[in-house]
Image (cartoon, rainbow, N blue to C red; front, side, top):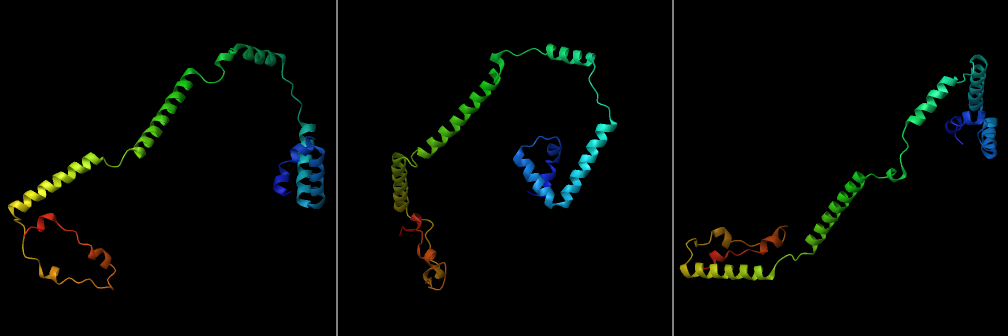
Length: 176
């Protein structure tokens, strides 16, 4: 046992409040540790000085009477009030319902379909109709391709080549 842990037990040791195993352990440590023996001797001397020079004080009968009156003046709570009050129950219920609502909303959000097929099909039809209108009118934005676009040849040593090979086509630029 370490000295710091042992010094916390000295007052219990002096008051004879430690079991036999604890006493044997403390006495074995004291036999080997001079520092702890000195500390125990100081505490023993302090206890002797206090007990010989300070009088033992007994409370007066008036003090005891005042203490008993104070105890009797405190109303005893009935058994139905021990524990949670109705406000505590209401608060706990509200918190539980809020937690349930948050969890239910999260589960619903995760379980909902990402897209609605009807909306996707409608969007595709609108896109196709708009494209047909543009193709029929002719493309006012069509220009000759830039020289750099025609001269583009991706090289294998360029780390961005895989991304450059995929070219997004603008449907408005396809009309001839």
